[in-house]
Amino acid sequence: MNIAHMTGYLTDDIELRSFDKTNISTFRLAVNEGKETIFMPVQVWNQEHLRNFLSKGSRALVTGSLKQEQWETKKGEKRSRMVLNARNVEFLDPKEK
Image (cartoon, rainbow, N blue to C red; front, side):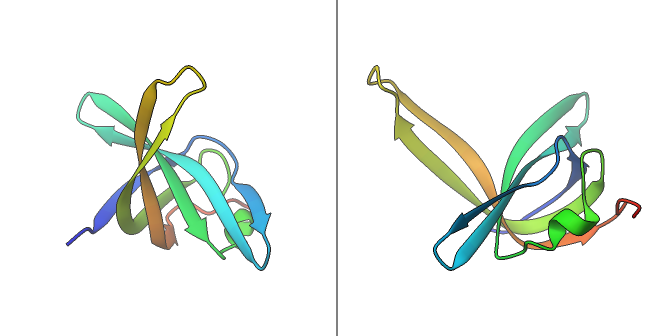
């Protein structure tokens, strides 16, 4: 079972990209892990409204699953990263309008 719950602060405003009939919102979540901070990339599908409630510095609880992305650079070097595919985003500190 692949379920992740992370609470943290958005490091930037949410970026929205559109593909045909679907949209993806992306942001990074700074999660304090003891003395370290983990910067977790987050992807949320078809949740454009998040930009109305969250911005850089907002605190959120994100629930979803972890996915490993892999790619190869132009120089042939293999790279990978973990991404949190969010199913639910709770506004713990929504931005003021």
